[in-house]
Amino acid sequence: MTRVFDDDLARGFGTRAIHAGQRPDMMSGAIMPPVYLTSTYVQEGLGKHKGYEYARTQNPTREALERNVAALEGARHGLAFSSGVACVDALMKLFKSGDHIICGENVYGGTYRLFDKVYRNFGIEYTFVDARDPQLIADACTPRTKAIVVETPTNPVMRLTDLKAAAQVAHKAGALLIVDNTFATPFFQHPFEHGADIVFHSTTKYLNGHSDMVGGIALLNDDDLATRLAFIQNTAGAVPGPMDCWLALRGTKTLHLRMPRHDANGRAIAAWLAKRLGHERVIYPGLESHPQHKLAKCQMTGFGGMIAVETGSQQNADAVLRRVRIFSLAESLGGVESLISHPASMTHASVPPATRAKFGLTDGLVRLSCGVEEQDDLLGDLEHAFAIL
Ligand SMILES: *Cc1c(COP(=O)(O)O)cnc(C)c1O
Image 1 (tube, rainbow, N blue to C red):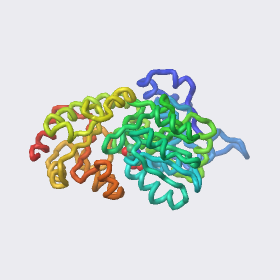
Image 2: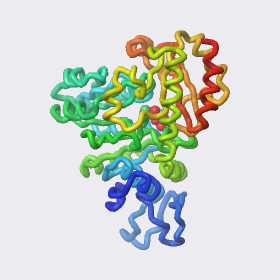
Image 3: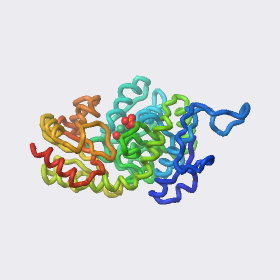
Image 4: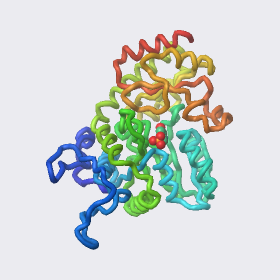
Protein backbone atom coordinates (compact mmCIF):
# COMPACT_ATOMS: atom_id res chain seq x y z
CA MET A 1 0.00 0.00 0.00
CA THR A 2 1.39 3.35 -1.03
CA ARG A 3 1.36 6.31 1.33
CA VAL A 4 2.39 9.81 0.33
CA PHE A 5 5.58 11.40 1.68
CA ASP A 6 4.29 13.72 4.38
CA ASP A 7 6.24 16.78 3.20
CA ASP A 8 4.70 16.51 -0.28
CA LEU A 9 1.27 17.50 0.98
CA ALA A 10 2.54 20.86 2.21
CA ARG A 11 3.65 22.24 -1.16
CA GLY A 12 1.79 24.19 -3.84
CA PHE A 13 -0.04 22.37 -6.63
CA GLY A 14 2.50 22.89 -9.41
CA THR A 15 5.39 21.83 -7.16
CA ARG A 16 3.50 18.73 -6.04
CA ALA A 17 2.62 17.93 -9.67
CA ILE A 18 6.31 17.85 -10.58
CA HIS A 19 7.94 16.46 -7.44
CA ALA A 20 5.44 14.73 -5.15
CA GLY A 21 6.03 11.06 -4.57
CA GLN A 22 9.37 11.04 -6.34
CA ARG A 23 12.94 11.14 -5.10
CA PRO A 24 16.06 10.98 -7.31
CA ASP A 25 17.04 7.36 -7.90
CA MET A 26 19.25 6.14 -5.02
CA MET A 27 21.68 4.26 -7.24
CA SER A 28 22.27 6.71 -10.09
CA GLY A 29 20.68 9.99 -9.12
CA ALA A 30 18.37 9.77 -12.17
CA ILE A 31 15.89 12.61 -11.78
CA MET A 32 13.08 10.65 -13.43
CA PRO A 33 11.76 7.59 -11.61
CA PRO A 34 13.08 4.54 -13.46
CA VAL A 35 10.60 2.26 -15.21
CA TYR A 36 10.97 -0.89 -13.14
CA LEU A 37 10.28 -3.49 -15.81
CA THR A 38 10.55 -6.50 -13.56
CA SER A 39 8.20 -9.20 -12.37
CA THR A 40 10.16 -10.15 -9.27
CA TYR A 41 12.86 -8.96 -6.85
CA VAL A 42 15.85 -10.96 -5.61
CA GLN A 43 15.74 -11.60 -1.87
CA GLU A 44 18.83 -11.78 0.32
CA GLY A 45 17.55 -14.66 2.38
CA LEU A 46 14.33 -16.13 3.68
CA GLY A 47 12.13 -13.22 4.77
CA LYS A 48 14.97 -10.74 4.04
CA HIS A 49 14.17 -8.32 1.22
CA LYS A 50 13.97 -4.60 0.43
CA GLY A 51 10.17 -4.41 0.75
CA TYR A 52 9.63 -5.69 -2.78
CA GLU A 53 8.71 -9.32 -3.43
CA TYR A 54 6.57 -9.61 -6.55
CA ALA A 55 5.48 -6.94 -9.04
CA ARG A 56 1.71 -7.48 -8.79
CA THR A 57 2.06 -6.54 -5.14
CA GLN A 58 4.71 -3.78 -5.32
CA ASN A 59 6.38 -1.83 -8.09
CA PRO A 60 8.42 1.35 -7.43
CA THR A 61 7.24 3.13 -10.61
CA ARG A 62 3.62 2.44 -9.70
CA GLU A 63 4.24 3.67 -6.16
CA ALA A 64 5.67 6.94 -7.47
CA LEU A 65 2.47 7.52 -9.49
CA GLU A 66 0.26 6.54 -6.56
CA ARG A 67 2.03 8.96 -4.21
CA ASN A 68 2.02 11.72 -6.81
CA VAL A 69 -1.72 11.65 -7.58
CA ALA A 70 -2.57 11.15 -3.90
CA ALA A 71 -0.60 14.32 -3.13
CA LEU A 72 -2.44 16.20 -5.91
CA GLU A 73 -5.83 15.19 -4.46
CA GLY A 74 -4.63 15.91 -0.92
CA ALA A 75 -5.06 12.27 0.12
CA ARG A 76 -2.86 9.96 2.17
CA HIS A 77 -3.13 6.88 -0.03
CA GLY A 78 -3.21 6.09 -3.73
CA LEU A 79 -3.83 2.78 -5.50
CA ALA A 80 -3.37 2.52 -9.26
CA PHE A 81 -5.21 0.13 -11.58
CA SER A 82 -4.95 -1.06 -15.16
CA SER A 83 -7.89 1.13 -16.29
CA GLY A 84 -10.49 3.48 -14.89
CA VAL A 85 -13.14 0.77 -14.95
CA ALA A 86 -10.72 -1.71 -13.32
CA CYS A 87 -10.49 0.85 -10.53
CA VAL A 88 -14.29 1.04 -10.19
CA ASP A 89 -14.36 -2.77 -10.30
CA ALA A 90 -11.89 -2.94 -7.41
CA LEU A 91 -13.97 -0.40 -5.46
CA MET A 92 -17.07 -2.58 -5.89
CA LYS A 93 -15.17 -5.49 -4.32
CA LEU A 94 -15.21 -3.51 -1.07
CA PHE A 95 -18.93 -4.45 -0.94
CA LYS A 96 -20.85 -7.68 -0.79
CA SER A 97 -24.06 -9.33 -1.89
CA GLY A 98 -27.06 -7.62 -0.29
CA ASP A 99 -25.36 -4.21 -0.12
CA HIS A 100 -27.14 -1.28 -1.76
CA ILE A 101 -25.36 1.40 -3.75
CA ILE A 102 -26.82 4.65 -5.05
CA CYS A 103 -25.32 5.93 -8.28
CA GLY A 104 -25.80 9.05 -10.36
CA GLU A 105 -27.87 8.07 -13.39
CA ASN A 106 -25.63 9.85 -15.88
CA VAL A 107 -22.24 8.39 -14.92
CA TYR A 108 -19.71 7.17 -17.50
CA GLY A 109 -21.32 4.46 -19.68
CA GLY A 110 -18.72 1.88 -18.67
CA THR A 111 -19.39 2.49 -14.98
CA TYR A 112 -23.12 2.05 -15.53
CA ARG A 113 -22.51 -1.13 -17.56
CA LEU A 114 -20.24 -2.61 -14.86
CA PHE A 115 -22.89 -2.06 -12.19
CA ASP A 116 -25.91 -3.03 -14.28
CA LYS A 117 -24.52 -5.98 -16.23
CA VAL A 118 -21.92 -7.45 -13.87
CA TYR A 119 -22.30 -6.52 -10.21
CA ARG A 120 -26.09 -6.83 -10.18
CA ASN A 121 -25.47 -10.52 -10.97
CA PHE A 122 -23.46 -10.78 -7.76
CA GLY A 123 -26.32 -9.49 -5.63
CA ILE A 124 -25.26 -5.88 -5.17
CA GLU A 125 -28.33 -3.70 -5.56
CA TYR A 126 -28.13 -0.39 -7.42
CA THR A 127 -30.46 2.58 -7.54
CA PHE A 128 -29.72 5.17 -10.22
CA VAL A 129 -30.86 8.67 -9.35
CA ASP A 130 -30.62 12.20 -10.71
CA ALA A 131 -27.71 13.20 -8.48
CA ARG A 132 -28.25 16.91 -9.18
CA ASP A 133 -30.84 16.82 -6.41
CA PRO A 134 -29.43 15.75 -3.01
CA GLN A 135 -32.98 15.06 -1.84
CA LEU A 136 -33.37 12.35 -4.49
CA ILE A 137 -30.15 10.75 -3.22
CA ALA A 138 -31.45 10.93 0.36
CA ASP A 139 -34.81 9.45 -0.68
CA ALA A 140 -33.04 6.46 -2.25
CA CYS A 141 -31.15 5.59 0.96
CA THR A 142 -32.05 2.34 2.69
CA PRO A 143 -30.59 0.70 5.81
CA ARG A 144 -28.44 -1.38 3.43
CA THR A 145 -26.99 1.59 1.53
CA LYS A 146 -23.22 1.34 1.72
CA ALA A 147 -22.06 3.83 -0.89
CA ILE A 148 -23.09 6.75 -3.06
CA VAL A 149 -21.22 6.98 -6.35
CA VAL A 150 -21.25 10.27 -8.23
CA GLU A 151 -19.45 11.80 -11.15
CA THR A 152 -19.32 15.58 -11.40
CA PRO A 153 -19.45 17.03 -13.94
CA THR A 154 -20.96 14.06 -15.76
CA ASN A 155 -20.07 12.65 -19.11
CA PRO A 156 -21.36 13.95 -21.49
CA VAL A 157 -24.29 16.15 -20.40
CA MET A 158 -22.29 18.00 -17.75
CA ARG A 159 -24.59 17.59 -14.79
CA LEU A 160 -23.17 18.54 -11.41
CA THR A 161 -23.58 17.00 -8.00
CA ASP A 162 -23.31 19.23 -4.94
CA LEU A 163 -20.50 17.29 -3.27
CA LYS A 164 -20.96 18.80 0.18
CA ALA A 165 -24.67 17.95 0.17
CA ALA A 166 -24.00 14.44 -1.19
CA ALA A 167 -21.37 13.83 1.52
CA GLN A 168 -23.86 14.87 4.19
CA VAL A 169 -26.48 12.48 2.82
CA ALA A 170 -23.93 9.66 2.59
CA HIS A 171 -22.58 10.11 6.08
CA LYS A 172 -26.03 10.40 7.61
CA ALA A 173 -26.83 7.04 6.00
CA GLY A 174 -23.54 5.55 7.19
CA ALA A 175 -22.39 5.20 3.57
CA LEU A 176 -19.24 6.20 1.70
CA LEU A 177 -19.22 9.00 -0.85
CA ILE A 178 -17.23 7.87 -3.90
CA VAL A 179 -16.46 10.56 -6.48
CA ASP A 180 -15.30 10.17 -10.07
CA ASN A 181 -13.14 13.30 -10.49
CA THR A 182 -11.94 12.46 -14.01
CA PHE A 183 -13.50 15.48 -15.74
CA ALA A 184 -12.53 18.22 -13.31
CA THR A 185 -9.17 16.78 -12.13
CA PRO A 186 -7.63 17.81 -8.80
CA PHE A 187 -6.56 21.04 -10.50
CA PHE A 188 -10.17 22.30 -10.65
CA GLN A 189 -12.02 20.34 -7.95
CA HIS A 190 -11.14 18.90 -4.54
CA PRO A 191 -13.80 16.36 -3.52
CA PHE A 192 -12.05 15.49 -0.24
CA GLU A 193 -12.53 19.08 0.94
CA HIS A 194 -16.29 18.59 0.47
CA GLY A 195 -16.37 15.32 2.42
CA ALA A 196 -15.68 12.59 -0.18
CA ASP A 197 -14.35 9.30 1.21
CA ILE A 198 -12.88 7.91 -2.01
CA VAL A 199 -11.93 9.82 -5.16
CA PHE A 200 -11.07 8.05 -8.38
CA HIS A 201 -9.89 8.84 -11.88
CA SER A 202 -9.50 7.35 -15.25
CA THR A 203 -5.82 8.39 -15.57
CA THR A 204 -6.32 7.71 -19.29
CA LYS A 205 -7.84 11.18 -19.55
CA TYR A 206 -6.54 14.52 -18.20
CA LEU A 207 -4.05 13.13 -15.67
CA ASN A 208 -2.02 11.40 -18.36
CA GLY A 209 -3.20 13.97 -20.89
CA HIS A 210 -1.32 12.63 -23.90
CA SER A 211 -3.61 9.78 -25.06
CA ASP A 212 -0.88 7.17 -24.79
CA MET A 213 -2.00 4.83 -22.01
CA VAL A 214 -5.05 3.45 -20.19
CA GLY A 215 -5.23 3.47 -16.40
CA GLY A 216 -7.16 4.25 -13.25
CA ILE A 217 -6.39 5.37 -9.72
CA ALA A 218 -8.23 5.56 -6.40
CA LEU A 219 -7.28 7.99 -3.63
CA LEU A 220 -8.30 7.66 0.01
CA ASN A 221 -7.53 8.98 3.48
CA ASP A 222 -8.89 6.24 5.71
CA ASP A 223 -6.08 3.81 6.59
CA ASP A 224 -8.35 0.76 7.06
CA LEU A 225 -10.21 1.35 3.82
CA ALA A 226 -6.89 1.82 2.02
CA THR A 227 -5.61 -1.46 3.47
CA ARG A 228 -8.74 -3.25 2.25
CA LEU A 229 -8.42 -1.75 -1.22
CA ALA A 230 -4.70 -2.58 -1.39
CA PHE A 231 -5.66 -6.17 -0.52
CA ILE A 232 -8.15 -6.17 -3.41
CA GLN A 233 -5.59 -4.56 -5.76
CA ASN A 234 -3.15 -7.37 -5.04
CA THR A 235 -5.69 -10.18 -4.76
CA ALA A 236 -7.74 -9.44 -7.89
CA GLY A 237 -4.61 -8.15 -9.63
CA ALA A 238 -5.84 -5.48 -12.07
CA VAL A 239 -2.56 -3.60 -11.69
CA PRO A 240 -1.10 -1.23 -14.29
CA GLY A 241 2.20 -1.96 -16.01
CA PRO A 242 5.20 0.17 -14.96
CA MET A 243 5.53 1.81 -18.38
CA ASP A 244 1.94 3.04 -18.23
CA CYS A 245 2.52 4.34 -14.70
CA TRP A 246 5.59 6.20 -15.92
CA LEU A 247 3.63 7.77 -18.79
CA ALA A 248 0.86 8.87 -16.42
CA LEU A 249 3.49 10.30 -14.08
CA ARG A 250 5.06 12.24 -16.93
CA GLY A 251 1.56 13.58 -17.65
CA THR A 252 0.78 14.76 -14.13
CA LYS A 253 3.96 16.90 -14.15
CA THR A 254 2.25 19.31 -16.56
CA LEU A 255 -1.35 19.05 -15.32
CA HIS A 256 -1.21 22.58 -13.88
CA LEU A 257 0.02 23.91 -17.24
CA ARG A 258 -2.45 22.03 -19.41
CA MET A 259 -5.66 22.53 -17.44
CA PRO A 260 -5.78 26.35 -17.70
CA ARG A 261 -5.36 26.02 -21.47
CA HIS A 262 -8.10 23.33 -21.76
CA ASP A 263 -10.27 25.66 -19.68
CA ALA A 264 -9.52 28.78 -21.76
CA ASN A 265 -10.22 26.92 -25.01
CA GLY A 266 -13.36 25.36 -23.49
CA ARG A 267 -14.72 28.74 -22.41
CA ALA A 268 -14.00 30.40 -25.75
CA ILE A 269 -15.47 27.56 -27.80
CA ALA A 270 -18.57 27.21 -25.60
CA ALA A 271 -19.18 30.95 -25.86
CA TRP A 272 -18.79 30.85 -29.64
CA LEU A 273 -21.09 27.83 -29.99
CA ALA A 274 -23.72 29.41 -27.75
CA LYS A 275 -23.67 32.57 -29.85
CA ARG A 276 -23.79 30.60 -33.10
CA LEU A 277 -26.42 27.96 -32.16
CA GLY A 278 -28.23 29.41 -29.15
CA HIS A 279 -27.51 28.89 -25.46
CA GLU A 280 -30.06 26.09 -25.12
CA ARG A 281 -28.02 23.88 -27.44
CA VAL A 282 -24.67 24.15 -25.70
CA ILE A 283 -23.96 22.41 -22.40
CA TYR A 284 -20.92 23.75 -20.54
CA PRO A 285 -20.82 24.48 -16.80
CA GLY A 286 -18.92 27.71 -17.49
CA LEU A 287 -21.84 29.23 -19.40
CA GLU A 288 -24.18 31.37 -17.32
CA SER A 289 -27.06 29.59 -19.06
CA HIS A 290 -25.97 26.24 -17.52
CA PRO A 291 -28.64 25.46 -14.90
CA GLN A 292 -25.93 24.66 -12.33
CA HIS A 293 -23.49 27.43 -13.22
CA LYS A 294 -23.64 28.85 -9.69
CA LEU A 295 -22.74 25.51 -8.13
CA ALA A 296 -19.97 25.05 -10.72
CA LYS A 297 -18.51 28.41 -9.76
CA CYS A 298 -18.33 27.63 -6.07
CA GLN A 299 -17.41 23.93 -6.29
CA MET A 300 -14.86 24.14 -9.11
CA THR A 301 -12.06 26.59 -9.78
CA GLY A 302 -12.32 26.12 -13.56
CA PHE A 303 -14.67 24.44 -16.00
CA GLY A 304 -12.31 22.46 -18.23
CA GLY A 305 -12.52 21.57 -21.88
CA MET A 306 -15.58 19.31 -22.15
CA ILE A 307 -18.60 20.64 -24.03
CA ALA A 308 -21.77 18.92 -25.27
CA VAL A 309 -23.59 20.36 -28.27
CA GLU A 310 -27.07 19.52 -29.52
CA THR A 311 -26.98 19.44 -33.32
CA GLY A 312 -30.66 18.50 -33.63
CA SER A 313 -30.39 15.10 -35.31
CA GLN A 314 -28.08 12.16 -35.96
CA GLN A 315 -27.73 13.39 -39.57
CA ASN A 316 -26.57 16.81 -38.39
CA ALA A 317 -24.18 15.22 -35.90
CA ASP A 318 -22.79 13.00 -38.63
CA ALA A 319 -22.34 15.98 -40.98
CA VAL A 320 -20.47 17.98 -38.32
CA LEU A 321 -18.25 15.01 -37.46
CA ARG A 322 -17.33 14.60 -41.13
CA ARG A 323 -16.37 18.24 -41.58
CA VAL A 324 -13.89 18.74 -38.73
CA ARG A 325 -10.19 18.73 -39.61
CA ILE A 326 -8.37 19.47 -36.35
CA PHE A 327 -10.87 17.85 -33.99
CA SER A 328 -10.62 14.08 -34.53
CA LEU A 329 -13.54 11.69 -34.31
CA ALA A 330 -12.64 9.42 -31.40
CA GLU A 331 -13.72 8.18 -28.01
CA SER A 332 -11.82 9.33 -24.92
CA LEU A 333 -11.02 12.87 -23.80
CA GLY A 334 -8.58 14.97 -21.85
CA GLY A 335 -5.60 14.68 -24.20
CA VAL A 336 -3.60 17.58 -25.62
CA GLU A 337 -5.36 17.07 -28.97
CA SER A 338 -8.99 18.05 -29.54
CA LEU A 339 -11.48 15.23 -30.02
CA ILE A 340 -15.11 15.07 -31.04
CA SER A 341 -17.44 12.16 -30.40
CA HIS A 342 -21.02 10.95 -30.71
CA PRO A 343 -21.92 9.59 -27.25
CA ALA A 344 -25.19 7.86 -28.26
CA SER A 345 -23.38 5.50 -30.65
CA MET A 346 -19.96 5.47 -29.01
CA THR A 347 -19.28 5.84 -25.25
CA HIS A 348 -22.92 5.48 -24.19
CA ALA A 349 -24.14 2.84 -26.65
CA SER A 350 -24.61 0.40 -23.74
CA VAL A 351 -27.02 2.76 -21.96
CA PRO A 352 -30.62 1.86 -22.96
CA PRO A 353 -32.14 4.44 -25.40
CA ALA A 354 -34.97 5.25 -22.96
CA THR A 355 -32.44 6.04 -20.22
CA ARG A 356 -30.35 8.10 -22.63
CA ALA A 357 -33.44 10.09 -23.62
CA LYS A 358 -34.28 10.72 -19.97
CA PHE A 359 -31.14 12.73 -19.41
CA GLY A 360 -30.98 14.45 -22.75
CA LEU A 361 -28.35 12.24 -24.33
CA THR A 362 -29.94 12.48 -27.76
CA ASP A 363 -28.84 11.10 -31.12
CA GLY A 364 -28.01 14.65 -32.14
CA LEU A 365 -25.63 15.29 -29.25
CA VAL A 366 -21.92 15.62 -29.99
CA ARG A 367 -19.23 15.93 -27.35
CA LEU A 368 -16.12 18.05 -27.70
CA SER A 369 -12.93 17.51 -25.76
CA CYS A 370 -11.12 20.79 -26.34
CA GLY A 371 -7.38 20.20 -26.44
CA VAL A 372 -4.57 22.69 -25.94
CA GLU A 373 -4.05 23.74 -29.57
CA GLU A 374 -4.25 27.40 -30.66
CA GLN A 375 -7.72 28.76 -29.93
CA ASP A 376 -8.13 30.46 -33.31
CA ASP A 377 -7.40 27.24 -35.16
CA LEU A 378 -9.98 25.33 -33.12
CA LEU A 379 -12.59 28.05 -33.60
CA GLY A 380 -11.88 28.10 -37.33
CA ASP A 381 -12.27 24.34 -37.49
CA LEU A 382 -15.65 24.47 -35.76
CA GLU A 383 -16.79 27.43 -37.86
CA HIS A 384 -16.24 25.28 -40.93
CA ALA A 385 -17.81 22.16 -39.38
CA PHE A 386 -20.92 23.90 -38.05
CA ALA A 387 -21.47 25.89 -41.25
CA ILE A 388 -23.97 23.20 -42.31
CA LEU A 389 -26.26 23.96 -39.34
C1 LIG B 1 -13.02 7.08 -19.34
C2 LIG B 1 -13.74 7.25 -18.08
C3 LIG B 1 -13.84 6.19 -17.16
C4 LIG B 1 -13.30 4.81 -17.44
O1 LIG B 1 -11.92 4.81 -17.55
P1 LIG B 1 -11.08 3.82 -18.51
O2 LIG B 1 -9.67 4.25 -18.24
O3 LIG B 1 -11.54 4.06 -19.89
O4 LIG B 1 -11.37 2.43 -18.06
C5 LIG B 1 -14.52 6.45 -15.98
N1 LIG B 1 -15.05 7.65 -15.71
C6 LIG B 1 -14.99 8.68 -16.59
C7 LIG B 1 -15.61 10.00 -16.24
C8 LIG B 1 -14.33 8.53 -17.80
O5 LIG B 1 -14.28 9.53 -18.66
